[in-house]
Length: 319
Image (cartoon, rainbow, N blue to C red; front, side, top):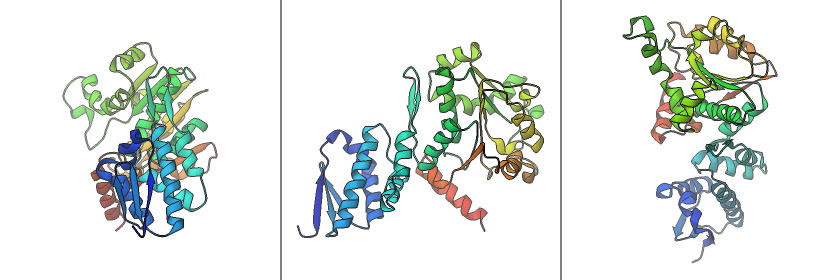
């Protein structure tokens, strides 16, 4: 047909991942290229006479196919990053996505970045001793930090993983909650276990806790300690006070790596302006050895509805 051009995907095994559920990736291609795209079996049809558009699509498709074959899950953020980098004649973003895979030793797990910011976050953690990951819920801040930590500990480049978070959140004080201290603390630490259990069997996590390779505790328990040869993660850092943040940052010893994660739109302190994370962002951003990675709604990798919810709140906050 006049105005139609087609390309055949030779490897049928990648079709479902390449096209996406209900052809959602095809819809992204249409949006980016401004053309109608149809599929029939392993053949893709473009309704365009424009040779440049055809060449661009062929190149994007090849890059996306390579991503799928290497185990990456395609999503709108990755497709848009590939399109943007190719359109601008730059392949750096595509290379970042390809290169920054977290492989936990002994076949435990393999984690792929699902956005350019996630890839930059992984790269920053591997190249720097201290990284701040700041952004909305669902962007993978904690999960990717935990994956990097387990990679380091299981690979024996670091002795132990220490994960901590403040335990007074959402207006609740532990003193007013029922039960003993462990019972009170567990709900606050459960999300950290959830992240690990997505990467390792529960039995392995328990064994690592028993032999001291994993230490999960409330932030208050960090006082007086020196954390050497450790991969340290401070989660929910927006709910630390300035004093707590300073206390935490000064616990770090030799041969340690630290990741601080937080969402500055979800500060639960009585006075949000007193957040230790906000203060740290202000006074530490010029220190060359400390890296700050900022996530946004485009990096949300949970249910697509979460991205829309984050966008709605961000829009309202800007009013």
